[in-house]
Length: 193
Length: 193
DNA sequence: ACTAATTTATGATCTAAGTCATGTTTGAGA
DNA sequence: TCTCAAACATGACTTAGATCATAAATTAGT
Image (cartoon, rainbow over all chains, first blue to last red; front, side):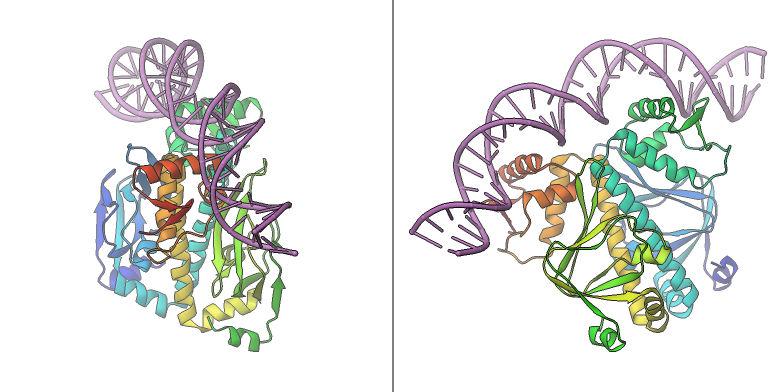
């Protein structure tokens, strides 16, 4: 996506400081958000206060379209992970973008497909697999993004919030996975080999 | 979608008898399937043989696009729930459809968004909620599709396979939900009130 | 209407993961 | 390099839901 083009159209750049809420469940969607800088997390919170990370979006990505496109209130909170600048594109402009920019439309279709793929994979894990398997699956998924030798900049708590497990379980399970040689850890950090 | 148009293009109609497999995990996607008649289910199966229903697709709907669009092997089985006729649209034709039929492209975007929405909802349930809550959520979701007085044509086993629970748990939980007045059952069948 | 096959039902264990409590390590900032 | 907060670690106990076993109720097919 070309951000300058969006800004030139007169769309406003909004700033969110770390941990501030961009939208929350129940709100009626009005915009699609393009991240110019920073990072956000999308989380649902259960009645008992348990958080689940639905996704993390980084610079250059956008979020909030599904709810807008099907005109249903948001299910999740979206919160800035660090100080972030986003461009809020309203419904009309977003639809125009889809209509008039075939490349964008194709890109959107692929983006939605990728997310659907990830969610299908996680659903299968949460529905059928036990802690170790579940953990190994997201760890390998996350390792896909980084270079050999690098370590995952994700805490056990975050892994817990992505898998629906509890921190203690994640800690115990990563230990088991490391002992089995299925992952490698250095000073607690999970490293790509 | 206009099926005659697809058939006129020389695309072949394939027939699948009940319980026959249309594709399975690991296969490289080559087609998007449009259902002319019948119904299919998409299920993932864990190592221990536990099934999870990722989705059910009926006449007029299509399936298999996400994997094709991002060029990744299928994650799930897709199996005919009843005798079905499907039109297999190959990659080139499907991309052409997206490019040349803006209405279809928009429709596809909405379809993907709807599915993403459903999966996000289910992920939150599986990650954070307990049996009763989980069950009530899909039951209400499924009830959305039918008329008052009608009953859900879904077995407890199928509810189990949609929620990652076991039949016995679904049976016990539906009983509790009925006792609490949160759902209504007649002869075991869940009825919309 | 009758039988066989599904589906629903229920009780008795068992177990993976949650919960709680408390301690140790690590790393960021003064 | 010291301090403090965050992250990791580990043991003891609890529990929701799985598992296993067996039976009653529905439904479908002849």
